[in-house]
Image 1: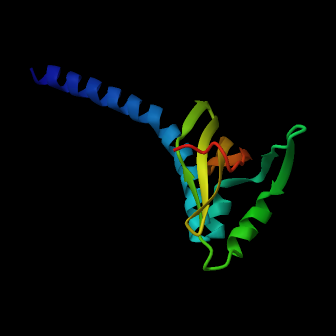
Image 2 (image 1 turned 180 degrees about the horizontal axis):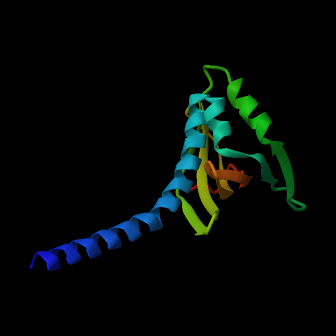
Length: 154
């Protein structure tokens, strides 16, 4: 009887362990993104920078009537802007959903958002993150986003 209990307990723990592993990478990817935005809200440049790989790329789709263009921004410039944001200015990017896909050590996250400055709505859009699991853990290697002021339903 004791052997049967141990076998059942072992199977139960194996199933739980497998389920936890399946969720771990997805949760870790989400945590990197959340930490970056928490660092932005706290104006903590070290926390923001820690979310990125050294050669990460940031881009924004700029919609225009005659066709969109893409603007680029250095991560170092983004981190510097966070560090130099005036104390009275509150930046708050609210992520509405996390759609994460993972293949081995590569992840993609699609995150619709709304952005507020000092509690006032500024714009909305979608971030598309690409992350890679490196020796230090998951790091953002690429972000491209959209920005608009209309069609920002709850």
